[in-house]
Amino acid sequence: MIPNPIRKVLSSMQKHRVRALLMGGQACVFYGAAEFSRDTDLAIVADAANLARLRRALDDLQADVIAVPSCQLKFLRRGHAVHFRCQHPEAPRMRVDVMSKMRGVDVFSALWKRRTTIALPDGTRCDLLSLPDLVQAKKTQRDKDWPMIRRLVEANYFENCKRPNKSQVVFWLRELRTPQLLIEVAQKNDAACQRATSQRPLLTLALAGSIRELQMALQAEEAVEREIDQRYWLPLRKELEQLRHAR
Image (tube, rainbow, N blue to C red; front, side):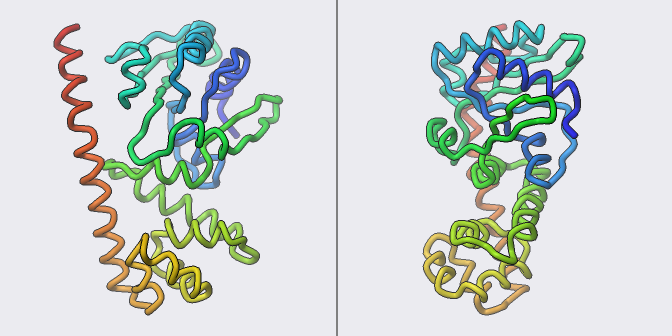
């Protein structure tokens, strides 16, 4: 069950026709890998019309910016997150974080085409990142994101493993982080796995059933992604520091 404050945020976005996709911990709940979060994280399209709609929705939520940067297109387009705090009685102290650009994640128009849309019991529509896009967005330097990636892909595997389609098999080969499951998928889908090894070389270890070596390769793969994410955020964090000093 989605808590009332989050439903209020989503209904306000729907009411004002904001082009936004739910991501973060709340999206993980929908995909069966529950993560407790007091925040609502949204990916939005960064154009003037949508930003105006977003501002109307935030006014409805009685939300104010609580940190740098301010809510401007130039910051969203560079990859910054803008943070708000709601004061509406139905969403007291709810934090809303908005982004438009994320490292390694496709442009919004592509994310929107692949989105998952669900209806909540009260009729509120919720558009969220597709599962593959959510997994990609969580490949960060943060410790909490990597166990969540593992749970997200595992949940999808156990839900669909009896009669998977081709796209699901490709997704599992690309993203599974559980050695035993990755070996199982690889060995059941030898041809697909062979084709995928050029994008993910550690799949050769999965085909061979080498659990220990595969575990080490998965750790190395994670370390590389964390390092790339750290480098990506260095100039953005420097800019944030400059904005804090200027303020």
